[in-house]
Amino acid sequence: MSTLVRLHHLSVPLLRRAAPKVFDGRHLPALHSHTSSRPPDLTFEDPSAFSVKSFRELMRALGVFQLCSFPVLVNNCGKLLSATRSILGKQGFSLIMRPSIYAQFVAGESEGEIAVAMEKMRSLGLRTMLAVPIEEDLGESTGECRYDENLEAMLQCVRLSHTKACSDPKMQLKITALLSPELCVSRASTHGQGTVNLVTCKFVVCLHFLQVKITSNLPEHPFDLAQLVKAMDGEPVHFPGLTEEENAHFHCGLHRLNKVGEASISKVRVLVDAEYTYMNPALSLVTMAMMKKFNQKEPWVWNTYQCYLKESRSLLLDAISQSVKHSFCLGVKLVRGAYMDKERKLAKGEGRPDPIHQSWEDTNASYNGSMDIMLNLISQNPQRYQIIVATHNEESVRHAISQMVKLRIDKHAGSVCFGQLLGMCDHVSLTLAQHGYSVYKSVPYGSVDDTLPYLVRRAQENRTVLQGIRKERDLLRQELWRRLNEGLRLRRQVV
Image (tube, rainbow, N blue to C red):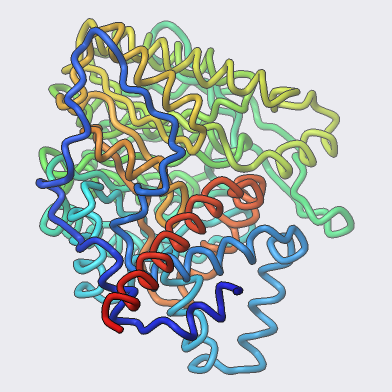
């Protein structure tokens, strides 16, 4: 008998009775309190991790993941969604999206919906890392008024994270939501005296190749982190190499970032996202300045390091060096990276070497090696160094746990946590949470129209992950079959 036929014959109440009640995160089943002498045996192959999900959530996840398994749908999702919206209209489109793809990957739109989603995750032992789905790329700059509106959205995110979330709340920040990406496009290298050589580049859009190419570089000019901090504080600082207009915008952007830092310090940890390599050096420069100002006692501002880049290890070591020289704490979000295809196309078009590791194995070695560096530092000084192991890779998660045990890092201390995207990799997230580890889900929120561009970008950037979720689908099916069989058994007892 097919699954659909079984569903037709089983009543919803029976299926609900077959599923365990959702319990408070503080009373999750005790799955052994492992000592520091031996790491837990985590295989992430137990479908009971999904026992806390409702029947509707199981069915929705299976349906969405089935759609995501077709490359043609993922690769063209932007065009397909736009066409569907044009045909159905805004209201009809929202009626279809809200209970399906939107509900799978987005917390909601209103403050009430977001609070419910956060409470739901808290009941599962998970923590939320809110993300405002605002970002810009080259050619998308919208003016100071728009950046000021984005600032208000970021400040609201700080407030929501602080008042609604769990202990030690975190949020994500994209600097290009507050500062023009055209101004951020740069090549930079950090030197021993705390100065950063920033080369601001002019770009033109080559419509034939549909990409932006560097056409000219201005001479290098030193940027001192102390000068950036002064500018954040409102002091008049002239940055060489920038025009008066660019200087004015840079100051406005730094003021906006300073407001986010002042609002979040001692309340919410702000994790700055990495973006494309043509703007990352400038983003890291600004993030380092925020760290210098706000991370004197604890790491409240974090930076992201993309381990699929060949230079990621050297960038991380340089950040560690800078944190020592400038006496600030360092928070690290460690990811593999999501812009592989675009980065390679840009490098090929500009005649540059491929910045991405040549193989998956090299990227894994880069990720685990960078993780080991941070874990060793944390074992020596957990107050000054923190990391979120942001990955869906089970082997890297097991490696992190093994190293934590080996280095005697307390999993309850908060210096090491794990992160996955909302709606994905729940078999890893829930298993880790049930074993007492700190697990954060990256949680976007906003209206259907506001979040769709964000979801399309994330889907295309993570399509290899989306198309490789066969294991999670299998575990969901196993839990669904368990519910069906249990429902049939209960039905026989009733009859």
